Image (cartoon, rainbow, N blue to C red; front, side, top):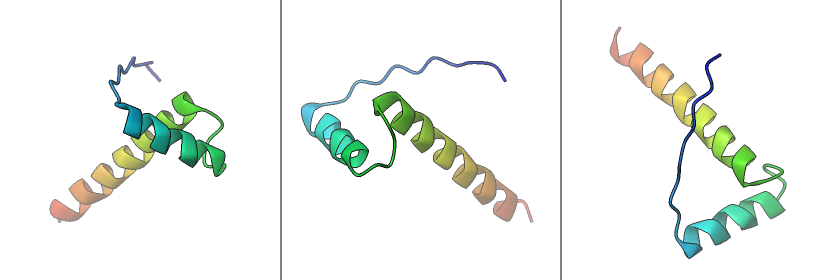
Length: 54
C-alpha cells in the first residue's frame, strides 16, 4: 500500500482531547490515533458509498 503523508494543524483543545483519548487506551500515541481515525473514516465512507449506489 502506498504511504501518504498527512499534515494536521490542531489547536490546544484538540490536542488535549487527543491526549485524553490516548490516556483511555484507544491508541498508544497521537500518530496511531490519527491513523485509526482515518481508517474508520475511510471504512464509513466506503460503506456509505456502497449503500447509496444500490
